[in-house]
Length: 315
Image 1: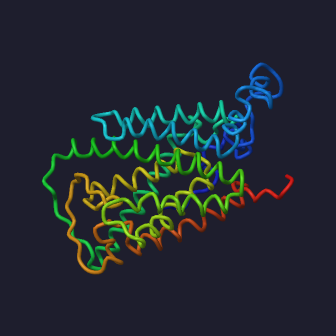
Image 2: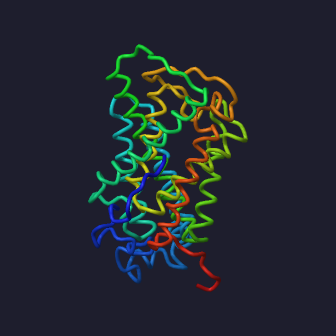
Image 3: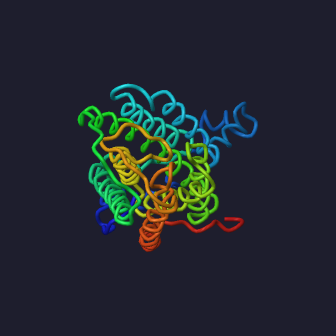
């Protein structure tokens, strides 16, 4: 999940509909008076619950439950089921944002989605290949052909990893990061979601405190910075997808899990170099590369108005 050089003009915000000015505060319609407002008002049956659901924490939790249910039902399904699950998760996200958060979703705009996904995908692929190459040059990895049928393995990896990348990015970046930055600003939101992303991976095989910290710095930090820079779920999901898919096809454990790949990898030397049984993500090399990539992304995000300051009391 790395970043190469790309100008802000390559973003899916090239049109007025997709500009950074389409902030999360943009409403879809007048929310003043009407039957829904009366029913949800202070004396209405759904008043308190309605107000909570429309708050940042409320729509974050509502969307997380919805996307999580879709992911749980489709993530390990056969054939194209994970891909269909990813499409359903995007639809759930849009519904929650339109109905609960009362805002549009320029981060899921179809216009420019393909270009954003390809750019993010290229960055993610380069990140993993460079990291694996450096670890190999330092004597940490050696690869051998697994003898698998190429097309079935690649097809399965693509379907599964698309589903995982899209649903995780919807939960952690589109929902959690955007909700928390509404409350406390982009900086706090990035730190909190990065830490939570690391904690969420502590239950994986081979995980330990270091691997959780590595995931927080490397994946949470880089993916969060990528989202703040481009404000496109397609860009960050493309980056995440090729990151995981390249690892799997190389035979490197993906966050401790070892699904079938095209190669098998033999690991030599220190776990700090190789990542040990958890995989490349717990190696110090990709952590350093990811941080080096995240910093310029955050600088560009700030310059382009893609970050939010913490709200002062009374504002």
